[in-house]
Image (cartoon, rainbow, N blue to C red; front, side, top):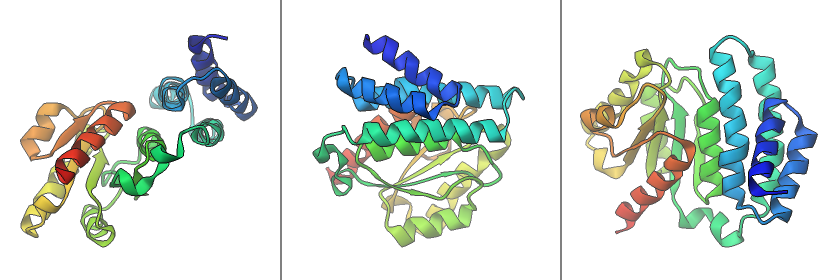
Length: 219
């Protein structure tokens, strides 16, 4: 079976909410030498994106999303085992505080980013969805994170990203953290306007941007 066929199978397994199929496809991916991160991003995450789109269109509901996420997680657990141990060394990659901003209850995209970051060796502290802005800053200080990464999936919740920057500046600790933002309505121009450090459109891009930010931090 070719890589494209295996990726399609992984995507279908999530769309059909079939954990047995996703586990089988994950094992096939490993046997075929498919890069685990490619399998997660181009196969499983693509399936979750389909489910997210269906949810937004009112054609899928929370129970389906939960079962699809179970199929996603079952395959990820297998694929992560195939990632070289040196790539799984959390301490070497950096610490990320991840969340969906205050007032926003979407979390599928955020969860995919979490999986990709974790699989790439980052330590991820997940505050979940609708994360209180003040709490975000408090947790960033408490865990001494390197990167604050917040997603906004609605135009009405985008200002919460700006508010995080404002609070960091007010407390005189803006320079202690790199701030990365994303989400469907968010743009690179918006992130520059609010004083953020990086914009990521996709989960795989979030990993690359996080690596670049860590390179800046560590010189």
